[in-house]
Amino acid sequence: MSAIANQLNTIRQRIAKAARVAGRSENAVSLLAVSKTFSAEMIRAAYAAGQSSFGENYMQEALEKIKALADLRGQLEWHFIGPLQSNKTKSAATHFDWVHSVDRLKIAQRLSEQRPIHLPPLNICLQVNLSGEASKSGASAADAVSLAHALAILPRLKLRGLMTIPAPTDTLDAQRLAYRKVSELFATLRNDGLALDTLSAGMSADLEAAILEDATLVRIGSAIFGTRVRD
Ligand SMILES: *Cc1c(COP(=O)(O)O)cnc(C)c1O
Image (cartoon, rainbow, N blue to C red; front, side, top):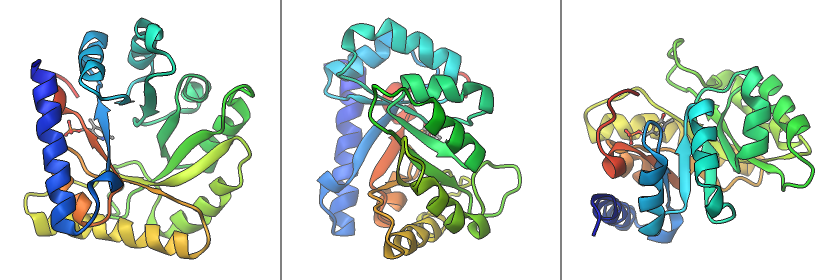
């Protein structure tokens, strides 16, 4: 078995165990393999091991890999998870199935206008930053509710849920606390009538905490592909 296949197995077991501990079905948590900085050939190896959803952060790098893997078009699902500037929305709308990092109405409007008509609506998550760190991207707690309702009605987008990247912390309790705030907001929005099914939360170091707080999609990079030489 390839190293990537081994590491994918280990991650799938971690997800299944965390779901069991949380009293949830392991099918309730999907795995996004974050392939930023790793090669198209490594993505191919992960695909051969049964992984079909991949997350990328940098548009130019992502487009090169999507092109290199064009023979698998229709088999792979591409998720854009990095910061998204206005000049990249056209590429995101054209080449991706999902964008997790929508945190402003203007970006969402551009994605909706630029989503090609022959493709289904673009799946998006509203990225939130509930810890109030000014340096991080993501909508604040104060803005998130009205923004979610505004995104939900854009015609060529499908608002699937929330995404968050909390500041790294060491203990399970601290990790859970950060994820719980987002999980509570997710529940509030669903109670408000938004048909959301995706809570994109949890990375290599804290997926257990995220799953305990109801994450439905974990974004895992280094635990599958190895240590990144750059971020
Ligand atoms: C890099 C990245 C990940 C994966 O992080 P790992 O610690 O390598 O699992 C997840 N989400 C986002 C938004 C990232 O940029």
